[in-house]
Length: 199
Image (tube, rainbow, N blue to C red; front, side, top):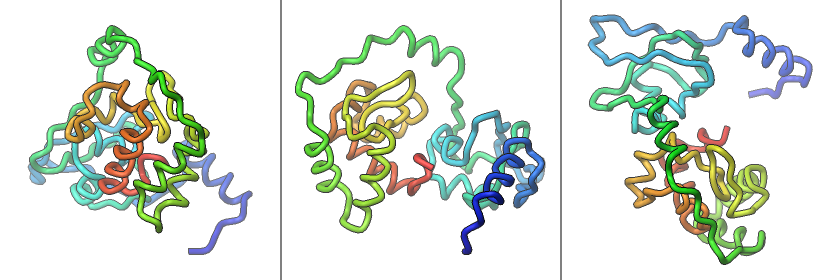
């Protein structure tokens, strides 16, 4: 694949934001497809929808005969993979999260070098460089970095990934401020969806 010149990339990104650049289409599911459908909302991405459905990115793409490069637009109907339950966080979840206890910040703070060492221990050698680049971009290797949605070295969105994180034994957002827990969760997310959660 040839790299596009910066001006062309800029024009394409503006067009995508305005919804005027055509991309590979995803056919709307029909009644005969007998799939549970969902409606794309502003800000949705393939990986976010897969998280809401509790499935891997590849399963979500397969259910819609799409690739990660297939453009989705607000209002579009997509299929939820067979056997999956789509659970988009709504107002009730936002209120519950707002009422949840405050984050517990670990007393022991790790240096950037210590955080980097944990990433190198957890990710296989061939993935280390990319994982470190992402962690530096997301948190500047500060394991207690957090905002309204995302936490830790890899800035994992606890609310959107709650079901999947629960399968890893992570049931509280504060757990993601532990460097080792965050890196292990990030690697599990990579194994499930590739780098998509950070792209």
